[in-house]
Image (cartoon, rainbow, N blue to C red; front, side):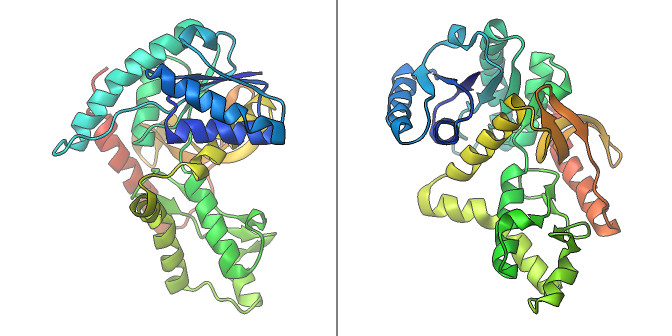
Length: 310
């Protein structure tokens, strides 16, 4: 099955590399305004496939996306010195107009998977520009934040991260909401599990872990300039869930009619992802503090998305 990636910088190329190693799809097409970069990334990734799986990877133009089941959009422009966030957003909306026009002309049946930041606002913009049903425009959302939370909890508890069932909801950004009230380790509430094994997960420990999740991107950016491996693997996971119709529950972003009183908003909740895109949305049991934090997160996102012009 064909997968497209538009924008072949570090995030787009990492997604392509992860899919190649995991055997996601059969044909990956890389598209970039800098065709030489797309061609170089395709060649480099293809040289890894003899060690992993047999997947075709090549650079192309929008027309080469014809028949793609999923197209990842990782394109965007960087903030100029002194430029405010809204001005940057408006410039990126213009980039998305061009990109999405090219994608939809070639592959009108494709599901769009958004990886450009600020993620939730750009997911909102992509849905508005494309006119696709919300379930066919998916933002990578808090899938990476959730993975970071599970990894840190696994370290704290001394168990495998995939035995931790906990989510980060809301914005992929500073207002994100780690959910403790419904978090589980195996089939046991996570705070109870921690107490049973003598590794308490008290308020101080939870606050520390939440701060590490939220600050992970800043730490990585300080050390190497940007993040790409984690989100690359996350994007591969979402694509696999779509093309294999896994119906996996993933914390991804989608334009939703109303969340906690905030209308017409894109943010992350646990959602069932399969061949048709997002099949259903699940609302975890939240305590009063978490519910208020989710509302605040929605308001932060809405403060920007409501100002964009389409």
